[in-house]
Length: 141
Image (cartoon, rainbow, N blue to C red; front, side, top):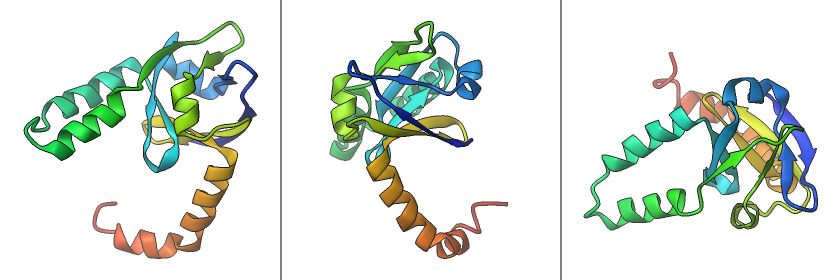
């Protein structure tokens, strides 16, 4: 959980908060996320996602497209001594990260957003927070 504002350096590296690194190990999987962000997973979480993807019917075009979009640019990224990871350029472009970014903890993974996208997304979600909560009441106990 939490929101942490950081900058990428000139090589595309970002510091992952120490609170997250404690649970992540020596490397993580970064992949294209929904809503224009990058998602970060432990190896076990990524394996769980791959198992779910394997259950999708490969005869359905939408399934193939989803798998391609999620897996094609995914990458294993190792932490350096300063707790940074090098984000692949293809993911930086997908997420429109220029320099300022936000690392957000999300239940079982984390996300990396461009500050501009995150601020717009958060403002939009905040404006309808109560309505969203009412619509999802049946799913949350």
